[in-house]
Image (cartoon, rainbow, N blue to C red; front, side, top):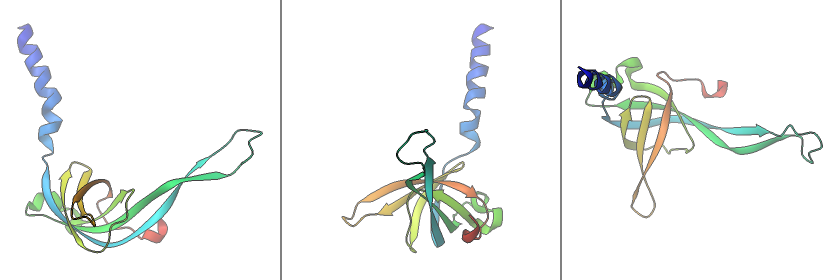
Length: 130
């Protein structure tokens, strides 16, 4: 009986993995904007009492296309994604895995770099309002 409960526990732990399969997608970038990430220094007596730019977040309105219609059904695949890399206006291949999107970005040397983006929302946003 004890081994049966362990088996049930293992199956329940693995259930989320089975719930969201990885899906091959194509991404078409429509527009994007970068926003500075800021970190404030709040120590008294500091020589700099302002905000420190620590990088940029990029918000991209993209169209996600896939042979799996269920993967992009919401808003015809018109999503807003967020990451730390700005993508150009070309088509990209990628993999959708839950709320993560791994995109293959071609490099100047001919190699492929995989970059992960998060799905900010499954609809386009006015980028001026982000």
